[in-house]
Amino acid sequence: MDGREYKSLNPTRSDSKIGSFSVNLDTGKWEDFATEDTGMDFISLNAYLNGISQLDAAKKIAVQAGIRLNSVDHCKSFIMTKKWEIKQNGFRCHQHQNEVSASPGAHLVRGRSQMHWDYFDADGKLFSVVHRFTTSDGGKEVLLCVYARHSKTGKYEWRWMAFPEPRSLYGLYELAQSLDKPVSLVEGEKCADYAHDILRDKFVCVTWSGGTNAVDKVGWSPLVGRLIYAWPDDDAKRHKLSKEEKEAGVDPASKSLLPENEQPGTKAMLRAYALMRSRR
Image (cartoon, rainbow, N blue to C red; front, side, top):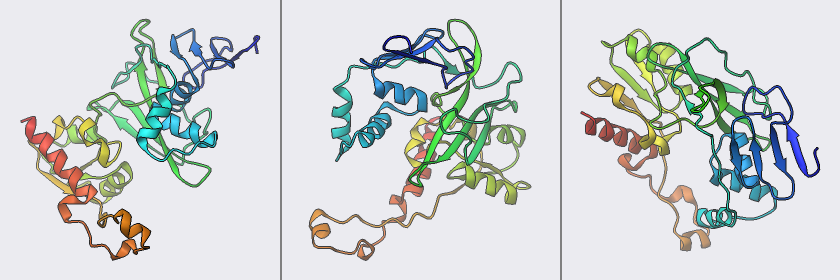
């Protein structure tokens, strides 16, 4: 402690000296003087340390503070009561390593992840790792660690931060090495690994990060012109209950299944196909 300034190591980077990273306990303003990463309150600090969006950070803090948020709009209005900013100060995922550098084995706050997936570029160089952690309530939390370059100093280091957009495909190296094989496009890295173990002799198995809601954030160009077999998850989602039906206690299982083209996985695959066609 230095007065009302809390000083510590920066858990998002390879920091060996206490003092460059500080948080004002009265205002919430925080800053890393070595990299110029900065923010104006605890929401941006939470987002920065955990590599998540500020919206998700606000939701987490609201729960911890006992604030009930009934909608996304409510949560956004909660965030906007704070005039914060967050900067990565030019740190951007470099997409490949210029030198051999092992990614961090653990997150300084969450420890070792239960599962992780390595993302390689087309030359086989590791540039990002997706980690899945189990939360205290049994849920899951996904954080990304990327090999990044500082725009001002040119320094390279691993940082806990989000993918740049467009996001790279998982399986990009295998895709580049097997130009003659058809592609099996699946949902999620875990599924891609499983499919790879079974189909590696005849197919290249790829996926993307972020799930069905992240399709528009992906760089689909490497798949343009390839023969693709899309395998969406078997979601079996049903029509939602109306407000009146909920109040009447109608069983959600009594509702009919959504048409195939409206199931989340199928919708995602169709959207990916449309994006690929637009790049031809």
